[in-house]
Image 1 (cartoon, rainbow, N blue to C red):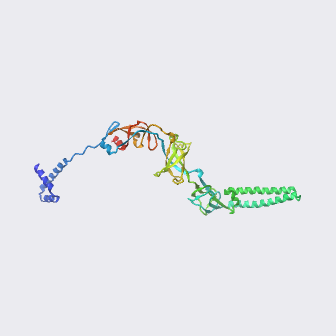
Image 2 (image 1 turned 90 degrees about the vertical axis):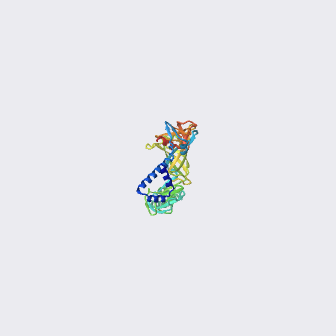
Image 3 (image 1 turned 30 degrees about the vertical axis):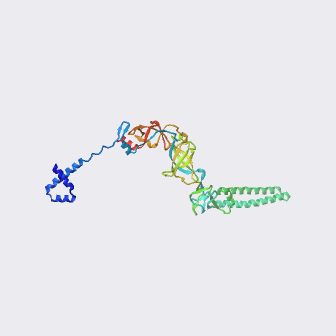
Length: 403
């Protein structure tokens, strides 16, 4: 053994090149001796290496998990006390942005004809009464021509009636002739009124009967707003039931939320609602519940809840999907244990929390959940005020249960 140690010391002082040179000078038999010495040296040095420390594994004893301070530090274990605070339940739902019905209008052509001109296109801001387009309409032209003809005949009959009345007063004609002339004038007056009414119905404007352009129907905006859609082009032949424009005032929009029936008793008119586009990280917009639907959808077991939103900044668009949080002010909880949502984990589908027993042990406690405000979660069963629950490290502790 002394010889082996001496040889190892010599080999330790040799460089790699010198060692290889010596090996080349040795006979084949010496190769095996040298290799054996190297193996012995490696085993000796390996045996001097300190054994690795035992793994720092927590122990699960019934509903208690015990661990070391080193484990607690490694998982950055943090706790918070169970508090008694009031909470306004928050109901998270999704919804769809839509037009406010009194602030939107679908403008039809009303008459069959050829589109003469289009004045405004998508995105244009228009005032009530602004001309959006004009249509050449033979039907309107005929009605307007009839008005002009009847007006001329009515004027002639009126003058004749006045003349006959004057002659009758001077005894230069019979009373019958005077009465017949006045009756004819009244007839043409009635016919003229009916023709003018027809023009008004066709064109949708009382002043259309006296329009200078015969047979030209103008399409006007019925409200102040924005041209959202346009479905006509210049030179297009359209029918009387064709929808030409969609004009909407986008300053106020509706958001329709689908709220499940179990949550409906918690909400009331005037409750605040926070909204933002689906998947967006933008700041929440504010709104208030203006109507709660009285009919449940039998397929989804939900009712539509309407929220009016100020959209003057144009943050929302009709048809857009939104995330919403309803602050159910009508169901305030004034007392009961409260914990952060991060303290609750689900084991076998049931909610649990880890209650701190000592700096190196926790209890696994099944709890019953109540309402949540988003920042606080009401625990209806399983916790007592003053207990400390784990808020960071719950995943690692849960993993130990299934190890």
